[in-house]
Length: 317
Image 1 (cartoon, rainbow, N blue to C red):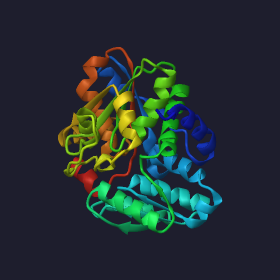
Image 2: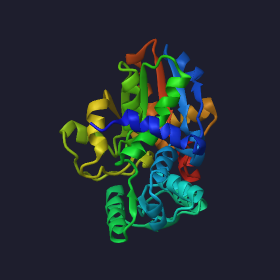
Image 3: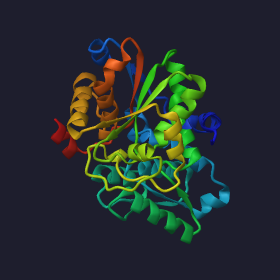
């Protein structure tokens, strides 16, 4: 299997000056109600308000001078696109970001705010990704996948390096799952240094493509329904490296209803007074659903981002 640990350590050395080390906050509210010690890894406070900047910057820094000159292409439901736009602006690299037609307006505006050149195409993330990849090939440009790239996975894995600095004992980590880049990076590094840690993948019932793929032992195709967790919605591209990582590294998957996601988001906003997006609510909801298994343990919940529209926020509240 590809070496996530080595890639993550190299990423940590490269990207540190471009990102924030986000806080690991103790949750008094969740800890008192569960007889556990619960901590939030606050990637909602990361630059671009999402963990995605880690993988995006790591990939962009790996490009040759010629590749930088030619420019890059990517596809994203929002957060990866914003992260790439931020990186392109910082490193003075040209690029195009393809976004599904039904992507969050808030996230599209965020991409544009960083100077990203946005093109809309397709109604599902896989369709958008396939088109963007073909466009890149036809124009001799580098395509940067939101998850199907070892350097992107390694960049996301730097969260795990920070966790090991911030908390001496980690028993379980709850991580949102879409294409699998975040959980692959975190699990790949953590399990190499803390073999007994449990990694729990969290997905919406309305878009459980990676979960069902792992269960079927092959990458499946299925249509996703609308979900509050738009950051994890959509399909998984064929031969994605994250599929094997999820099969071998994730201990358990938990599926969440829209009501469970909304309730978890409300709880976080009420008790921690911060914004979070639906994909971050997933991880909290999964913890609430399964907390009886983890009595007296140290639990980390990845709050992966804060990019939520005012309309969605009103609906939840």
